[in-house]
Length: 284
Length: 278
Image 1 (tube, rainbow over the protein chains, first blue to last red):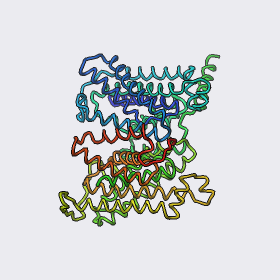
Image 2 (cartoon, helix red, strand yellow):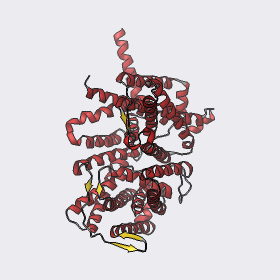
Image 3 (cartoon, chains in turn cyan, purple):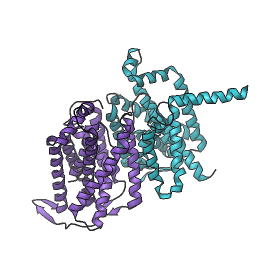
Image 4 (cartoon, rainbow over the protein chains, first blue to last red):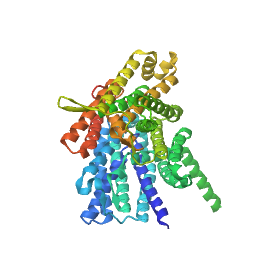
C-alpha cells in the first residue's frame, strides 16, 4: 500500500470516529460544534503519557479518552440548559478554549507543538472504528438506543414514561467525548506531531458536516458521510488548485438538494432488505 | 480602536440573527472578502473612501449570495441545515480567495497619509481616527435605520413573526435580502478598516475575526444591536488591557473563556432579554 493511500485511509478512519462522536451527542438532539476540543484533550493527554512517562500505547489511548470523557460530562451538565444555537455557540467556544489552552500550555510544547508520539497503525485505527461501529450497532438494537431516540423525539414525553432524560443527555456528552478522545489519541500517534492548530474550529465543523450530509438519522449516515467526504477532496485532485473551492460548492449544493443527508432510516431499511434479498437468492 | 471593528462584525451577526434567528458562520469570511476587495481597490489607486464604499457593495453582494444559497432553499429544514451550509460556504469563500489573492499574507498599500499627533499623554494616529469615525457613523446609521425607516420596521416585524409580517403585506424575501446586504456591508467595512491597521491579510483571517464578532454579540446580548456595539468595544478594550498586563498568548483564551462562561451562565448577555430558546 502506498504511503499516500495509507495516509488517506488513516485520516478517513479518524474522521469516521469524529463523525460518530458528533452523532453520539446528536442522538439526544444536542449539537456539539466543539468536538475538536475533546479530540485535542485525548491527543495531548495520551501523547504526554506515551512520550514523557513511557506508558504503552493502548492504556494511554484509554486514559486520554477517559480524560476527554470526564470533561465531556462536565460540559454536558451546564449544556442541559441550552438549546439550539446557544448550545452550538457554547460548544464552539469550548473548542476554542481548549485549543488556545494547549497553545499556551508549556508542558506539551505550547505554540511549538508536541513532537514524539508514535505507534498508531492502520489496523489499530480501524480496530477502533470497527469496535465503535459494532457498539453503535448494538446500541440501536438495545433498550438504551430506543430511550435515546425517545429523548430526541420528545424529551418531555420521554421523561413522563420514566426515562432519566438528564442522565441520558449528560451521558451522551461523555460518550461522544470518549470517542473524540480516542480519535485524537490515534491522530497524535499516527502523525508523530501535534500542535494546537490541528484541532481548530474547522475540524469540529467538518465532523458535524460528515454527520449532517451523511444523514443524521442513523449512525450509518455518520460513517458513510465521513467516508465520502474524506475521499472527495482526493477524488477532486484533477481540479488542481480549485479542488477545495469545488469541495465547498459540493457541500453547499448537497445541503440544498438533499438536506436530510445521503442515508435516511428508510434507505438503510431498504438497503438492508435488498442485501437480505440477495442472500436469500443465493441460498435457494 | 479594533473594538469598533468587532462591533461592526457583531452587528452584522445580530441583524441576521434578529431577523432569521439563524447564525451565519460564513460572516467572518465575508469580512475577509471585504478586506481583500479593499486591498485590490487600494492597489488600483482608489482613495480610501471609494474603496470603503465599493468593498461595502461587494461584501454585501457576497452576503446576499449566502442568503440565496444557504438560507432560502433551506427555510423549511432543521435549523442545523443553514448553519452548516454557511460553514461550507465559508470554506468555499476561503478557497476562492486563496485562488484569487494567494495564501501568502498580502500587504496593504499605503494610500492615506498617516499623521500622528499627541493628545495629552496619548499618541493617536490618523488611521485610528478614521476607523473610529467610520464605525461610529455606521453604527448610528444602522441603529437609526432599524428604528425609523419603513424597511427597518419591516425588519423588526419579520423578526417578531415571519408569517404575521408577510400577512400584513411585508415582502419578507426583500427583508431577508436587505438584511443580508446590510450585514455583509458592515462586515466589508470592518474588513477594510482592520486591513488598514494590520497591514497584512490572509484568506484565513475571517475565521478568528468572525468568532470574535460572535463573542461580542453574545456578550452584548443576542439580537440587541446596541448590545453588539458595546460588546465589540468592550472586547477591544479587553484585548488591549490583556496585551498590556498579560502575555498576548492568553488573549484568545480569555476571550473564548468569557464567551463560554457567558453562554453557560448568562446566555442573555449583558443587555439582552431573557430568552433561552433558539
